[in-house]
Image (cartoon, rainbow, N blue to C red; front, side, top):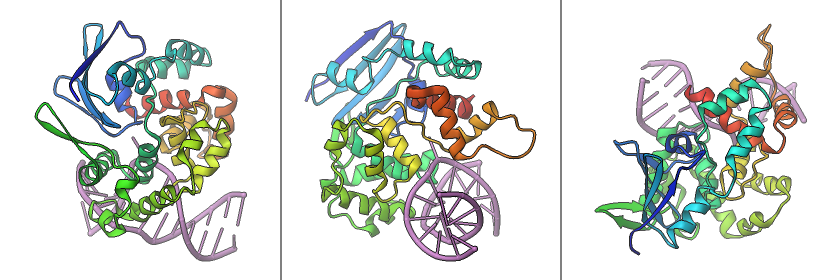
Length: 288
DNA sequence: ACTCAGGTATTAC
DNA sequence: GTAATACCTGAG
């Protein structure tokens, strides 16, 4: 594989920091100059913004244009989405102004499943560290510009890994969950390919929930952030609870919205774009 | 030393 | 069904 370059000029709704730091992915790292390098599938790519251009350089499995367009969701009209969401209320408008460059990546389903199982009751630096060690130990090495990068291990590559080995990599109590889920997928108790072609989101969600370590929040993150791309789901974590309570609940007393109430509220207010709304609100509340 | 972090699974009303 | 509780680990 040899290096390829791709460029998009004058992009709208495209800011590196917003995309990579909004909490959806774990394998993109900033360089000193504000550019990022990351790995997905068998692709290693460096992205930088120069004037009004985004320049992608790296080694990719297929044509870089095709890989980038798919992964960065370039064929979706985020300007239109933002316009629609911003018209809902001023809270959304504010959060969208803050995270105007967000795009929801099309991440590999398998990698997303494992990543968010690992994310449970964990913090981002450690999540990233665990995923990196998993990849170094069981993924394939890709060398580029004198550095080594490691692909995220496939289910097959994790086939013979024991719970103890996971524990050594620092997975903590998530070791057994990763082990069991990998096994379930290898044994086709859940069929990932079938999920992608199943338009019934609730059905797919229920299949995800059968996996070890996948509860409601993780399932929704998988639905939203993977190439399942179900933009209508609304993952509710601690930050989303905070922001929803702050914005949409008159807190005369200490009572807070229940999870059920938040779900209902999100569905009513944001409809089939709830996932996008969640992402703007989440990013804004956590970072701003 | 102790708390906390992108929740889930288990156990107990 | 809904509510407490334990759970690895390492950074602050």
